[in-house]
Length: 593
Image (cartoon, rainbow, N blue to C red; front, top):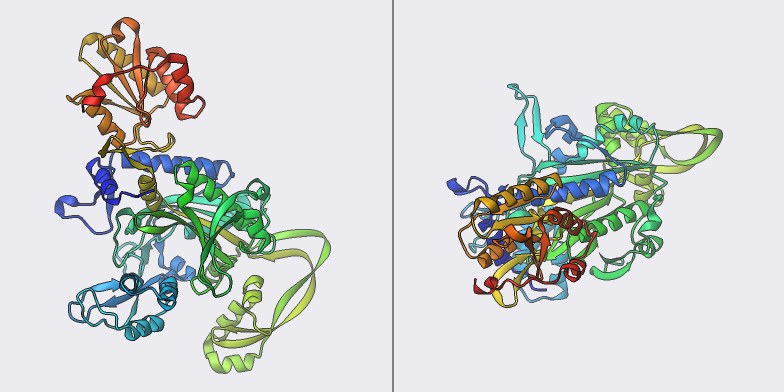
């Protein structure tokens, strides 16, 4: 499959699917407006996502504020760590995102194993490693000037709540934090039982250093996120068997090898510990099914595992659903086991109990990691910060301790602490829940979908078509009159009323061009069916329905059209069946566009 980036982007802008924001003032990099066809395309995505995940999985949907107080994002780590690496041209002052610049420069070099390994690990670089690579390979700016030292750039937009500058806030960089800080209310709503899931759909903001590639890297976009709360030691999923046999393309590495793609069942991936647990595997499987149902080509979909250096220190496992398009493999969905990190952070910062609990009828013996603490030694190092350190140490999740122990020693905030295994009997187990988080970047998926859906007619390569599946098509139907007469207008009015009653999205084409040109212009926006009311309709009370991809037509009684269109869109009836029932209708003018 060849992707036609230039043709797709021209089509999207020409038909106002999207447009650079404030374009009459020259536009703003990384900001896009959705037009009359982009809005229903995006809304169709959201509506189906809501049905597929929130309704089918019985999730709790929450809609939290875009303005997020400083304290929330300080606790989550975003204030300190939500950054990209930045380099600048010493002569011009131009700045560049470091990993993008390095990738661009290394792609021009001969592909050795060393170069391949560097490119494969660009997402994992810290400041020191980035500076060393720039120096070792004498990397210059695009203007061939020397680069300055690498720095961190925080990606959040800051503002103030009210006139007081101490009330600092940010435009949210993700919807997840709004769900975490409402965990207690959601937990109580779920009768204080786990597991359960919450979900949010909404705008998020990231002040990208160098936004580019249309909708793929922007500063404002829609995100759909799920937070699946589980017992940190019980991550089996009750519906895992429904997707365990599903085969997917997994892109991962064994030990320090370069990542490779292998097709296997999710069940085998979980069994062999390639995917960490059932809950993570379940949402990977559901994500694959969802993406294919909206029209993403399976051949160009893979799930890439984060490398150890790339993964957040608290994460148990993390996978990205990547979709291939003309820009290469694009990360569109992140599916992470975030362990107990988020709720632990908010619990410590807010001093609010965000624990879940299990009541036992008989005492249960449990093992746990107990730190051997030399308070005097720690106090001599940390002084007045000792209390906060000890509180954080005692609240560390078991999972985090187990993962990071080396010979029973954990290095925490640069201090080595010895842990021993201990036992105790409990009647009530309190614990911080773990979280599995699928996070969907809606704009990225929509752009990839457009490239996957676009093709040109064999007989005319300039004639583009968007083959959107019915649930995603911005318009299901376009109706036209071959002649403007009062009698035909009456037929049109009646048909419009019935289409509206059946919730079918449609428009009326009144352009004064040939019928063939009308077909072509509506193929470009992905219209599924084109209905023509002609002079013969006055006598036989029928109209022609043209199907987009085959360009075949049938002639059907007007009164049956709304129901038939609805059945076709819901896949309750096939076009082939209607052809057999009504026979093909030939209209020759289309050939004379």
